[in-house]
Image 1 (tube, rainbow, N blue to C red):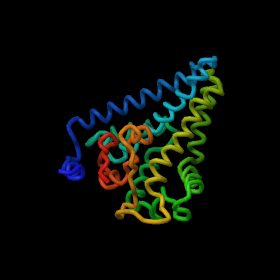
Image 2: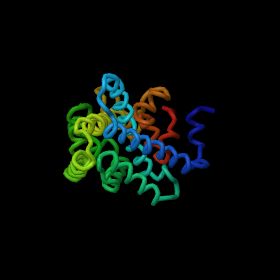
Image 3: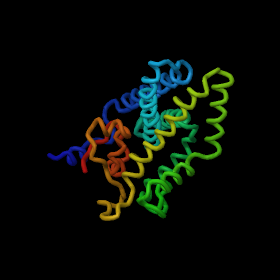
Image 4: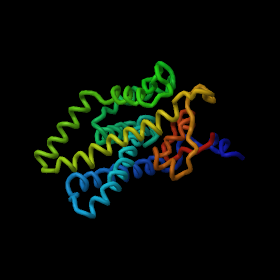
Amino acid sequence: MTAAADIATEPRVVPNQALIGLGLAALILGGWVGLHVYGVHLHRWTAWSWLTAPLVIAVQTWLNVGLFITAHDAMHGSLAPGRPAVNRWVGRLALFLYAGFRYDRLAEAHYAHHRAPGSAEDPDFHPDAPHAFRPWIVGFIRRYFGLFEFTVLTVAGLITVLVLGASLVNVLVFWALPAVLSAVQLFTFGTWLPHRHEREGGFVDGHNARSSNYGFWLSLLTCFHFGRHLEHHREPWRPWWRLKRTV
C-alpha cells in the first residue's frame, strides 16, 4: 500500500489528538515565554553573550513560527478536536503573543484563502505579481499588520521598557527582530513558495498549492511541516504534526 493510500484511510481524529496538540502548544508557548523573559529581561551583553545571542534569536524566531502554526491549527479545529472554545482561546493567546494579532480577523481571512486559493478572491495571494516576492510580502504585511497591531506592540514595548525596566536594545534584538524574521519565514515557506505562480508549469489541482521536498527535520525547522502545503489544502483537518509528504 502506498503512503498516499495510507494517508487517505487515516481517521480525521486520532486517539489523544487534543492531548498531544495541546501538549505541543504548551511546549511552544512555554518555550516562547521563557526565552522572551530571558532575552528581554535577563540577557546581559558580555563577550560570551555576543556568541549566544544569534542562537537565542534563531530559536525565538522558530518559536514565533510555532505560535502562528498553533493558532492556524486552532482555526481548523485540529488543535483540540470537538473543543471549539479551547481552540479559540489558545489561538487567540498564541496570536496575541506573536504580534498582537486578532484571531477572529485572521481566521476569517484564512477561511477565505481556503475557499479560493491562489485566486483574486484569496486575501493571501497577490494576483498582480503572482511570482514576485517583494511586492507580495509587502502587501501581505500591510494587509495583516495594521494600526491595531502597531498600537498593541508599541504600548507593550513602552511598558516593558519604562515600567518593567527592560533594555531597549534587548527588546529590539530579542522581541522585535525574531517577530520580523518569523514573518518573513512564515510568508516564504507557508505562503509564497507553496502558492507562487511559476513561469512554466502550473499546479496539479484546483488547490493551487505545491509542497516542499524537504525531509522531516528541514520541514519542521522551516515551517512546522506547513511547507507540505498541498497536503494541508487537501486535508485541512490535519494538525501540523500529522502532515505527511505524499505528493
